[in-house]
Image 1 (spheres, helix red, strand yellow):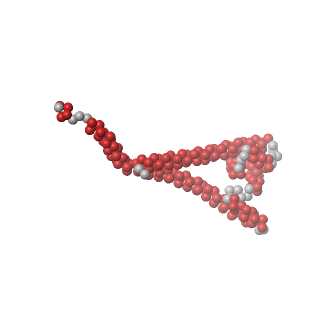
Image 2 (cartoon, helix red, strand yellow):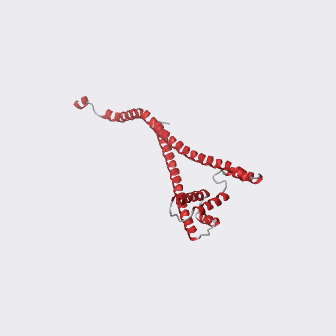
Image 3 (spheres, one colour):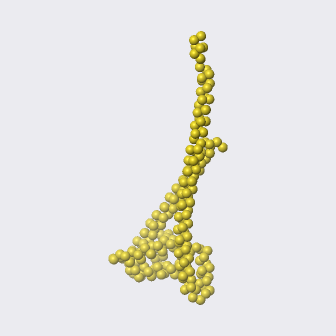
Length: 212
């Protein structure tokens, strides 16, 4: 494989990888923006429903979330944000107690939210088979949730760092090959130019022949 072919292969590889990384980044950002938008819409709809209906139940609040296709994690974040706003804003439309009651109902429905799925069934089995299993599992579940959140954040950062490092490495490697072989390439091109010019020189009449 000559230098030009190798250079083109590396260039195409870098372009494809950068393009794939760009698409992944755009998809990730788009998903995050959509989740934020969905959470904001749910917050507005839930506050409006709780203001209109003083007897709004948690089951009805879940229907509002299901219509907007919210995941459990989005519902949890929305409730936490509403509780924060109710505590920090003076004239918030909904009382903190009602929001905290919904948060309690959510925790009962999703006691293992944020924990990997493969651990949920064993934990639920322990809870049912051991007396006072819920009280015994609460500290463990809390630690597992914290560990799971830290692990997910760390994995996400590591993926970004690895992808960025690979892109920089490919670009640096391509540039190093290019700068190393550029003098040789220029020499080859000069020789090719001289070879092409040789037949033209041989066909030109010499000065002596012209005088005769």
